[in-house]
Amino acid sequence: MLQDKKIALFMTGGIASYKAAELSRQLIKKGAHVRVAMTSGAQAFITPLTMQTLTKYPVLTDTFDETDPTLVQHIDLADWADVALVAPATANILSKMANGIGDEIVSTTLLAVHCPRVIAPSMNENMYYNLATQRNLRQLREDGYTLIEPAEGFLAEGYSGKGRLPDLSVIIEAVEDVVAVTKWKKILEGKNVLISAGGTLERVDPVRYISNDSSGKMGYSLAKAAKRLGANVHLVSTRPQLAVPHGVEVEYVESARDMQEAMEGSLAWSDYAVMAAAVSDYRVSHPSEQKIKSDGSDLTIHLTENPDILASLATKKTHDQTIIGFAAETEHVIKYAKGKLHKKKADWIVANDVSQEATGFNTDTNQVTLLSKEGQLIETGLLSKDDVALRIWKIIAEAEEDDSHGA
Ligand code: C5P
Image (cartoon, rainbow, N blue to C red):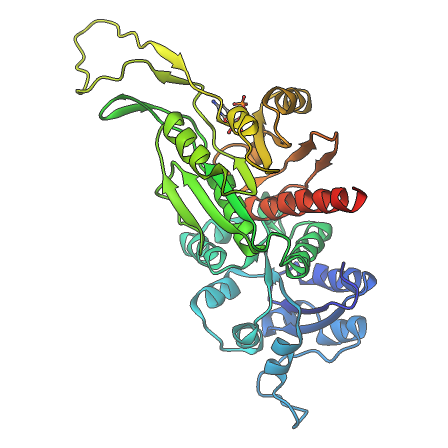
């Protein structure tokens, strides 16, 4: 995957800089060429000579130290790179990148970079959770950077917290993913992808409803990833507060029955239909037209079972669409997911364990297992929801390609 790929490694001033030396070695072992730029902060922790010796390329340390008159070194590095990797990324560089500041070699070169960018933030926990840092991270995510979650564990300050540079394997996997996206740019080219997202909402009266904890983030990540991979994307969402990924068409719904109508309405158009929404199993049988007043007595609400949208889509295929469902479970994840695959006649079920903090509802990370009706069982690692989404599309597209070759 990384054979002959050109990786620009940007190092900033954190103690994890020493790990970036090993990171460069591992990338080179995988066949990549690595060229390094370091801030003065990074140079306080590890010398440019170390990085030059490991990478066999001169290291950029100063914007104005132009030794070769035939080129401008920071533009040359920016134009050369297939992937830009910022590791470790301090709160300071995140702030500069989010705001377009270039005032030393690393931030200046990053302003000129036009390839996919991966950032591995690493800092003290308090700095990580600082509101400005979190705002910058949100901005960078919105700007299309791939952000790797820092790991939890023992920090250099002598206590445990979030902020460690994650395992090098996690960083390398993220780099491989962005390379794959570049290479796989066309895997969904021209395909029509229909996705539902969010928890449905069942009215009790005009101001009250029954719903669930689904944030819609996974569905939105799937929409964003499908768009990045070349698809036309129609999103049926219950979460108007989420930012719509660039170029994605959105239709807002509330109830399960609204969602069913919207999904079935676009089914014939779609090549892939994904039920990432958490559909309320029951709706209020007779929602009140007026706000219900409390009168000191108990209130009983009668519920009626909702249609199963996923199962219904699977029986209403108009051509050879791929129907994908989700199974959020708190125990016996694979066993229950297999049951759903068969019962609902989906082509794929994406199973995840929502009892774990990092993979539950409303988190930014996830880890899933894909089960196909052909019996494949494929796991992703713990990744951001955006990266899990890319992985899901890759797995499904790869399996379909194998199928069509095998046929
Ligand atoms: O049975 P369970 O709700 O766990 O199934 C999960 C899958 O089925 C999800 O893909 C969800 O979107 C879909 N589903 C549905 N209609 C329902 C209930 C679930 O489409 N009424």
